Length: 257
Image (tube, rainbow, N blue to C red; front, side, top):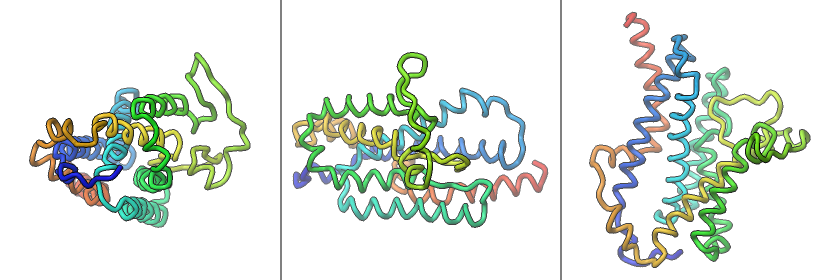
C-alpha cells in the first residue's frame, strides 16, 4: 500500500501509548521472572495460569501491534533488519554469558523475520480482502498455536499430530518444530506467531479500507505522553531492560531488602 497521502505521515500516538503500556507490563513481568527463577523467590502464582495469561497478553499485543504498524513506517527492510539484529545480539550475549538462561529465536528475532517476510509477500497480500485476510490469519493462529508441542488443531476437539521427523535441526526449530532438547527462555517460532503478525497487518488494512487514513486520524492520533515516549523507544528499552532489572534486584538482594 502506497503511503503518499499527507495524512499517512501522521504519528498515531495511541499506538505508541499502547506499546508503552505493554512495555511497562513486560518490565514488571520480567522483574517477577527474575525474582522467581534467578533469585529463588517462592511464588506459586507466578508459575500458574494467571502468570501465563499475563505473559500471553504481553507478547500477543506486541506481535499484533507490530503487524498493524508494518504499513505505517518507512524503509521496512531497514526496520526489519534492525529488529532482527537486535534479537541476534540478545541471543549471542545470553548464549555466551548466560547459557542457562539463553534466548534463542526470541521475540525480536520473530518480529524482525515477520517484517522482512511481509516485504516478500506484500504484493500478494495487498490483493487479499482485508476482512478475509484478518479472519483467516486469526483462525490459522489458533489452529497452529500448539505446533511447538507436536500437534495442530484444538485440543480435545480436533487434533492432528505432526510427524516427529519434522522436529529436528535449527531451521525447523526456527519455523516452529523445536528439536528434542532445545531450550530457550524466550522462544517465539515463526509459526504460529507469523499468523498473529499477519492478523495485525490485515487489521490495519481493515481500519483503513478507504486508504485516506480517516479512521486512524480520528481515533489514533492522541495518546498519553509518558506512554507515547516509552512506545517510541521500545526497542532501545527492550534491549536494556533485563540487565537493568537484574542489576537493581541484585543490589536489593545484597542489601537484604
